[in-house]
Image (cartoon, rainbow, N blue to C red; front, side, top):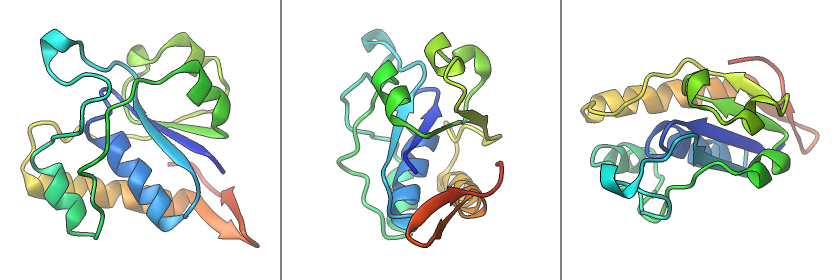
Length: 147
């Protein structure tokens, strides 16, 4: 099952979910932002994720995200995905995401401004949601419950 994980800026939650899904499920996923900031605001599409506390938090579970780049959601990503997991408010989403019929919302707090412990708490919450929702049965990924 191909999963698109969305948060607001693709700096925290969707980055974590993407790499955790690929580690746990070993199947394709993409992380992207619904409203990636403009150059005036800082991080932009294509920048390497530089969240200070996120890198050591993910390294703690054996995942190196140092090469992860920020992506803006596109219609092509939505078409590619079998399921779209959203961790931002509905107001942040483009219509083409909402109209896809593939969206499920997860209530996961934005770790922006949190210390490393806060990031790790969010990481563990996302990991638990992935493990609860997706399983591999006879070599196929199956969505078994909502988040």
